[in-house]
Length: 527
Image (cartoon, rainbow, N blue to C red; front, side):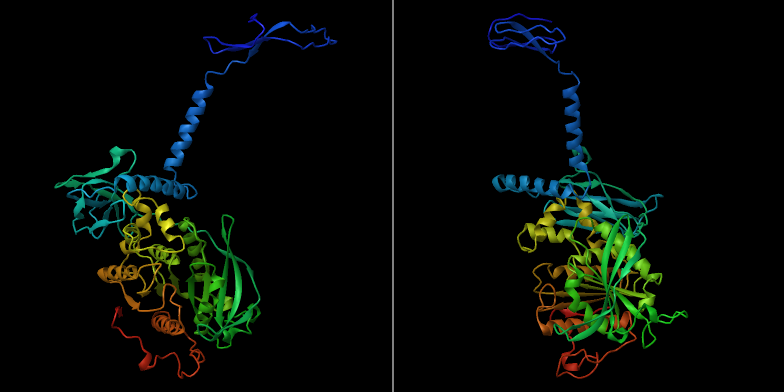
């Protein structure tokens, strides 16, 4: 199409999507070429036609944008959902600060029956419903699998249910809205649940790819002690590597792998293997050496790791499980580790890893939890009502988990109070009443849950010590003694060293009567 026009530029859109632009050339003269192209001189008139826009382009772009937005809205990718949940919370918080938080409706009730995949009633299953602020209402199913949760404010919820040996499931979805569970005031809403059998986790195989030479370490604080350390690099498959620190008593300080002879004799001068204490720290393990060294000096092979702070906890628990499988198979036997006797120790953030590990595998001799997180719903409730103001960005981590009434499974999975079993290993819970990171009520809630199912446990609530239980030397010594007494009872140690007490104190690890922990004033022992 050629359009002749005046000397000024004039755009023109045709009805069929073509766009024309034409103008008069004022001062351009193109020289003739060998291809005999015509010469354009000033004043010539020419029509320029810009290519037609394809009719399918904008629909394709629109669909791609919608698909991308939908993926961002529903994906379970750990790189996306924390950001999405945080943004949602801040938008809602802005709205609530101006127009008020959601009001509590009149109470209603939720009831139903929980069954397994074969239709059999499940007794002892937990069913929980939570408000946006973490306030939770729960019940345990009776022998016939029935449950009833009363006093639940009317509103929209996504309840969650779970039982030992079965996967936790959400009873509905927040989006689309018609999949939410609506609890009406003064009425019973009936919601039944079917729980599938929990799929056994597939932990990647682990192998050592490097073991450093032995070095001798000495710590003066909080406890004077010595131990031998090696650095071990583990490969967990899938291109994942993990560095661990391995400590044994100074009794093996001169030992090396070469001392393990063909008969399989352990590389220790006493001829004994040491029970293994898998110690999972809330941070880089090498920054906690003066905790590991006294434990090793007491006669344990301490295998210390420190998972990164991350929302990909399941991946880290997979790695821990692979590491344990390697130790049980005798992978560290030539370094004096007895893979048939393994205990676990963790605190604060890393207690999430170890308690999740215990949900998967209960074949441990003992578990020791210092300042553990046991109920994330309760942690969120305390954050929202401002009775708990955690440092270190813990408040941001709780916000990133999402609102408990909409995304309860993430809270549920790592709330150990809903996953305890009678056959858990003996568990020692040590918590400080002055803990400003994890409220001491978390330790109490865990102890009550263990008591309810008849699991063996001990609970020690201390008056001092702070979050990391090492704020003062006296606190550290007391906690160290509690730890050793528990480990000796359940993990047993072949080596009882003497020079571990502070100068001026005499005796072995037997507690003097005047320094023994008292079971009164917030500290109790039950088992």
